[in-house]
Structures are given as C-alpha cells and as structure tokens.
Image 1 (cartoon, rainbow, N blue to C red):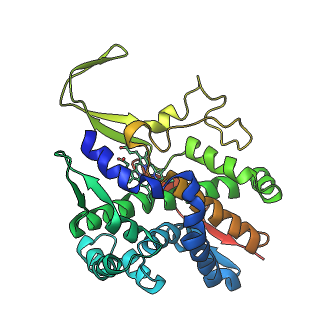
Image 2: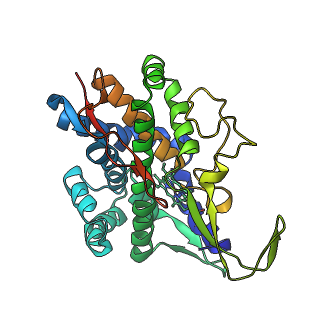
Length: 300
Ligand code: HEM
C-alpha cells in the first residue's frame, strides 16, 4: 500500500502507537505477560529465554490488545501461519466490540472512520479489521522476539555491559538502541523502483527490485566510530533499524516498551542471571530475519 491510501489507513491506528501510548500497552498487556512467563520458569533455576520468553511476549501482547484472553492467545501463537484460524478467534471479538467497545485495539478499529476518495466516510469492515490485525501480528511478532533475543545475547556475552545495565537500569534504553543499530533483526528491505533514477551515480531502471541493506547503513563508519562493536556507552544517534519515511515502523514504541519491560523484569526477578556454561553459546543467524540461535540461561 502506498500514497494516500496508505496514509489514510495508517492514520487510523497511528494514535494507538505513539510514544505517549507506551504506558497503555505496558499497563494493559506487556507487564502482565512478562510476569506470567517468568512465573512459569522462575522456580527451575534455568530456562531457554529465546523461545520461552522473547518469542512469547510480542504475540501475547498483540493478542492481548485484540482482547483475546491469555488462554486463547496461546492458540493465536500456535496458528500464526494460518490466518483463517486467527480470523475465527477474532470474529466473535469484533462482533462483541461493535456492540460494546472496551479499552482495546479492536474497539478502536471498530469505531474508526476512514474517508474515501470521494470524501464519504465509512467504518472499517470486518475484513479490513482482520487484515489490519494480521498485519500487526506479522509485523510485530517475529521482529520484537528476535530483537529482544539479540539484545539479551549481546548483554549476556558481555559481562561489563550486563553488570552496568544491572547496576543502572537507565542504561537499558541505550543497550536496546545499540542492539537495534548493531544487529537489527530486519537488516534488508526491498523496494520497487517506480521510475528511472540516478542514485549517487548508479542508474536504477524503472521496475527493478532494490535490496536495501539497513544493516550496512547502521554500521556506516562515517556515522559511528568502531561501528562493528556493541557499545552501550556510545552517544545515542538515530539508526535505520525501524526504517524511515512514510513506512517507518508503526510499532516501534511498543517494541521498545516490550524489550525494556521484559529485560528489566528478568533482571529484577532472576538473581545472578547468566548464560548456561554447559550449553552452546548463542550465535546470530538469518539474513532477512536475524536472531539468536538460543538463549540458555541459569539463575539463582
Ligand atoms: C524490534 C522490533 C521491530 C523492528 C526491528 C521493526 C522494523 C520495521 C521496519 C524496518 C519497518 C519498515 C519496513 C519498510 O520500510 O518496508 C517496519 C514497518 C512496520 N512495522 Fe515494525 N518492527 C518492529 C516491531 C513492530 C511491532 C511491535 C509492530 C506492531 C505491533 C510493528 C508494526 C509495523 C507495521 C504495521 C509496519 C508497516 C508500516 C507502514 O508501512 O506504514 N513493528 N518495522
């Protein structure tokens, strides 16, 4: 989607994703999800945080914001590759919210009105709401999962940085931004070239597909000293981890909130958190969706 159509649709959900709304997400869904997950392994002395923690938080948060109760949110997680099953879970919620809106995202979508080309206004159809919901699940689940795993892997393999964050929680924000710069989970994006252009001396013919490596821009030595190093103490400068321009990530403040609340809760609740020395150390794999292999940890 592009141009006016994109702007109109994006404007419907944008107000729920602005920085000021982060607390709404945290209070209603993120905090409770994070603590529920930690409850499930806190007594074990060890865990695999990549799948059992990082992967679960985003999908449970987004499902929660749709008004799906936690028990059914796990069904959504199981059905991520099957849109029809997800729509079946959403159908009764959309119907119920049309009757009586609550304090959640589906209620916002059922009440939203969009203006058509001819100036007439219409409420979103059920099909439009399902497709919005599927977009949010697709865009917001794997990304936040993998980025949280990358951040934890970076910290757990660097005791100095990890101890610094543990001692001064305000550094967590920098640790997350630095992970986004250093190893963004989506380092590659594509665009169609819509007209012939000369781009810095390179001729790009109309119709070609351009693979843009945001990951390389994020390590531009003209912008960052020692760009290949993960350094939480560097001066914060915006990176391209969330893209830019009209399609800049809609969910970036929610993603940041999930990572901050999630990692902070691990530090609060799991004393002496460390990588399990008997397991294979995490590696980063994947090109279009980069993430850690696993995060086997011990604590206590
Ligand atoms: C750390 C986690 C995340 C990363 C690294 C990330 C990254 C990105 C990037 C690079 C884009 C731009 C794509 C392009 O220009 O083609 C994007 C777009 C988008 N993201 Fe995210 N994202 C994350 C989390 C989320 C979350 C949590 C949500 C929703 C709950 C979300 C929803 C979206 C949507 C809807 C778009 C499309 C926006 C548009 O086209 O207007 N993302 N994301």
